[in-house]
Image (cartoon, rainbow, N blue to C red):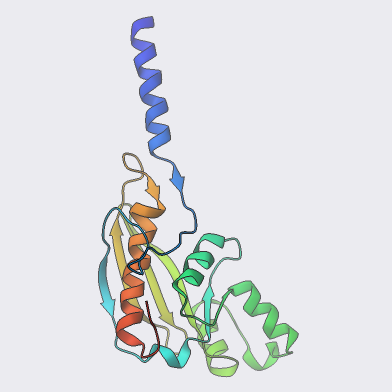
Length: 184
């Protein structure tokens, strides 16, 4: 029995180590993309002049320094802020009554139409094995861009280079194809 427990405990430790989630803000490599071990797929890519709305990109959660750092390292958007920062700005400028509800996509649309134009970026899990990066135009609530990557929490883990960097690389390609000012 002792002979069986030792290999099982080693296997358990190895599995727990490989299934960790590790993400750190990366710098782009010389080719202008983030280092990655695989590619993501573009599911949707609406043609739009991104330069008209590049002044602000809003990230949903205020605790997501990773996403904020990665988007800043793309070096396209003038300002990358959290939704909490946007709410504080609305209150600071005494616009909450004028804007009305800020809940959900309707709220995003209200803010964009009545206060400031911006884009909204978020992640979405359509299934247990897929992760999507979405760029949303709050004014219309349309998904402008969707990139998707397959991932495996148990065997390969969720890391910046195998999950998130491929999504951000597809996002860079989308920006390049829809901006006259962006230079990778």
